[in-house]
Length: 370
Image (cartoon, rainbow, N blue to C red):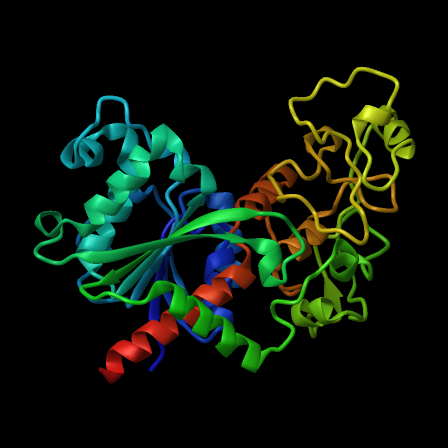
């Protein structure tokens, strides 16, 4: 019997995809944005998707005790604010922290054996670490969890250490219900198990490894499925005749002229003009033999960062950005351009989801054997 998962703040489903790839069953997911929810539902048709604000589903009509083994997802960091909240009850009752509060409340209702919360690395130091410490204390407080408590562990994972060609770093907070584990030891064991199944899973991967076989963009994004050459391309490859979302970017003549002057690894600083951008890597061109920076929601904008194709005078297509995020080629993104960019840029890379799925299988199998 497979382990059951609930995905909160699911987005387009990067976290869910990784868990599904590793054989777990995602029974429910919550996503309030209808455009993003369409992408989730069409790629995960067997999951019961709740398209609503999480505050409207944080009740006994939607979630029930012990219906899932694991809860995953991360409340957006904008929901965390310590102003005026200096104690546990103050933090959890502060309306500015409502997204976290609903996450906590659903964990309290379901009482999964584990939860995995993803967030930005900066949460560790936000308000001098007070917010992070509050989160740890809240999940460890029996008085807030009907006599139960979670043992909390955390780590920052860098995507490039997991065979993903980008420098993305994210914080993961792991809660294990009513038991303690040797966290570092279990992480190492998880890594060893995955290597036994897929020896190249953690291999260093470059931009070239990820997207070099993608050529010939089209207006509608539909292209013939290219032959996979590298191990990473094989890992993500589709069996279908076509793949999608490889749309031709639409750039102004000025932007194209600027990109023509920029070489591999260079950015706006080589241009003899003033570029108005808050991003230090604006008009940056990717290098074939390097990793990409963190894929953000602005990867389609030359001034948004280092997202210019290594060879062509254009930014990355959604398909290329999805490859760099480790989405499989059969995953199709729906919605308008800005929505698709948000979906890809905000997603948990599926390969990281796969890693955490293996971790949960290990921890819960060890629990069952004791």
